Image (cartoon, protein in one colour):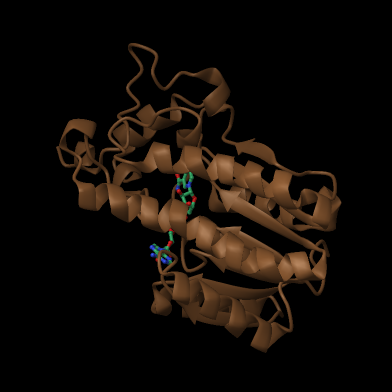
Length: 269
Ligand SMILES: NC(=O)c1ccc[n+]([C@@H]2O[C@H](COP(=O)([O-])OP(=O)(O)OC[C@H]3O[C@@H](n4cnc5c(N)ncnc54)[C@H](O)[C@@H]3O)[C@@H](O)[C@H]2O)c1
């Protein structure tokens, strides 16, 4: 068991990649706190964690609210004793063209997906620094290394997450706290379902991936669990691409490729 006895928090753990990570972490022996704004779905994840024979805690919270992130830490310590690992994945995707993007939509994405990552990492990091031990995994995206057209502030937010992961690794690595970033490619989850439900569009999107298919949430969870574990003891300030080769191929923006960008309305034809 790669995470036997480790106490971890997964933000965005109610759904998609966060849920898959919570379940896999539990299978590998971790006690899992599921921190999410959606309490109902977080409870479902908690049930799935318990089915793996582990302990689960549900924390209803908003990552963009600093007080909530401090309470998240307190509740986890009360329940589990301390915190060994954090995975940040909470996001709200608000598609939009750059020329039309409103301040509110920009702020929502950046507040949840970047400032929220910082709040969570800082609150949890202080505990880990005191322990002299811990692993923080930030979920970014291919969109953090290549511009996702039509995705509003998403790519800027995800590029920031990569730098935050590097900063954590550089500032805290010498004190026992590793920071790393995972960059998933396209994965079918509730967030992207609107884009993948049309088979024609799904095929177009898969065609920009050298492996010819999109990813499964479990395939991203594997990377997160590895980085949380002591098996990744020398991985710090790193960027792990789990994308079937999408970022490296640069096919997304090749003329003639119909990748469609991150545009929910693209499916409403
Ligand atoms: N699905 C993909 O194709 C893909 C690709 C690359 C990167 N990612 C990244 O992976 C992570 C998970 O994405 P997903 O596809 O599983 O999405 P998802 O929508 O299935 O899950 C996101 C979770 O975040 C929660 N959330 C939203 N706002 C919140 C807030 N303010 N506070 C707390 N929780 C909040 C939601 O309730 C949900 O449970 C995200 O960071 C996303 O950017 C996803």
